[in-house]
Amino acid sequence: MRIYCLQNDPLAGLGEIGTWINKKGYSVTTTQVYEDIDFLSPDDYDFLIILGGPMGAYEEEKYPWLRFEKDYISEAIRRKKFVLGICLGAQLIASALGSPVYPHSVKEIGWWQLERRKEAEFLQLLDGLPEKFTVFQLHIDTYDLPQGAVHLAESKACLNQAFLYENRVIGLQFHPEFTANTLNHIVEKLGQELTDGPFIQKPEEFLNRNDHLEGAHSFLFNLLENIDKGYQEEYIGQ
Image (tube, rainbow, N blue to C red; front, top):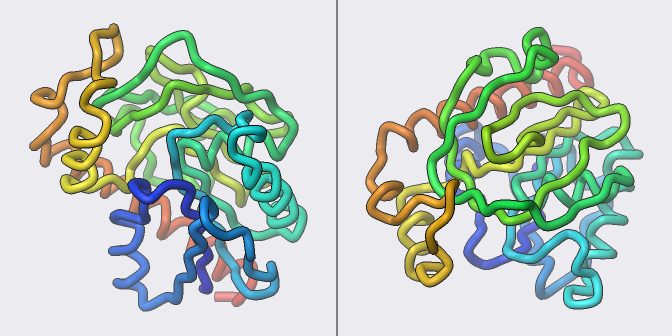
């Protein structure tokens, strides 16, 4: 499986997704969209991953490349590629599918529990998704569920935490790919933004939580294996 990654911010890299890719021995090509919009031809990849970033999916005037990125995502969906969007990536998918993205009423930062929706219970791509699981959140925006998408998970702070579209396009509002180093870098860069709020944890609350990191990575690897299996069954016949 050939993997293509769109990176929207230097801080938001592949993280543990890279660990899984290396373990599988798959190829990955990454475009730093904030510097370059010379995208790969859709013929040159099988699985598109769109990573996070601090910008809003609606800030096209401030970040003109977002318009081109959303058009590219639309084409990937039209071409029946497997697609995974994380945080901003999920919001860009939602926007590409015609749903509004907008500032949420609260910020959600730290380790927070999600609950699986009943609609997700028997979906093959979500096979093994636990009923409740804890993941790292870092967002101030949210989105409306795209028309035709299946609502997969929610939290107390944010209704739309995950969705599935056409059984191959997945949007995750949260960050299962983050590593301990990522969290340390977040504190260094965004420490002043970690102010009081009902869903904002302080660094001493979310750093060094290896139990949560292991759980999030287990969820991530399970999801990626399901995507890989779906791809193999559909295109390779295995």
